[in-house]
Length: 83
Image (cartoon, rainbow, N blue to C red; front, side):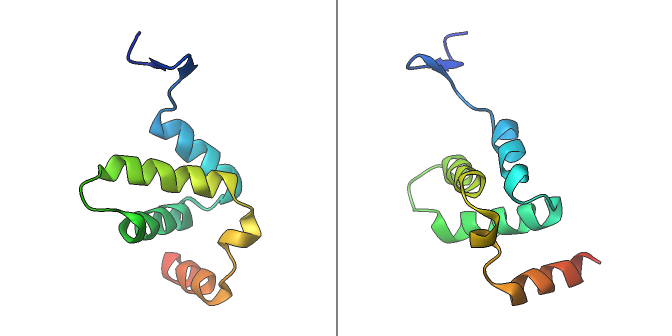
């Protein structure tokens, strides 16, 4: 139980982070594509990839939908590939 509680608050599981990010970006395929590209782009050497992915998911969850989808050509391309 001590490993779940960190500094008085519950540590978020990655599934909680994904669920929160899905509130912003409802298309699961697009969320997966965006999270993987952002994780590769923002990852810093000598850090855990899991932490980078958690940060990316938190940023997606806290962002506005329009800010994430600001490049319409990328959205159209991702939807075309998904179909």
